Length: 136
Image (tube, rainbow, N blue to C red):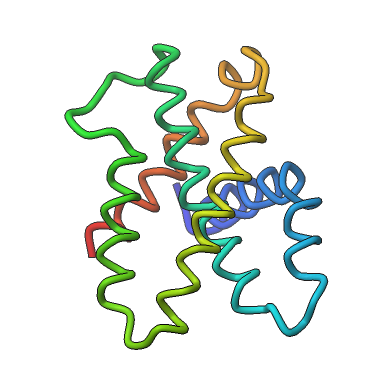
């Protein structure tokens, strides 16, 4: 895959997620004084949401299972990041990361079997990109 195809796929994945979660992001970003909180929610929404969707694809049989669930990997990453945070204000943002992830989980529960059949391949691709970030 060339770089152009990669960019197009990445943009399409982001567009799909934004369509699913636009009402949530709009609420979080409506108050300009809460930009950091909105960014933290968005991070949780995308990273946690990708992990939850990946685990759903495994549960539905579209992906072979692994020793550690994707959600557990994200939880571990978030805990390490929170512990390494330089100050209390930064640590408090992790509450919003979890809120974003919780909102993603609610939306993911609403998906139909056809959604999983059509999207697990793209979810795998997106999760693999996030997985590289988690290993750093």
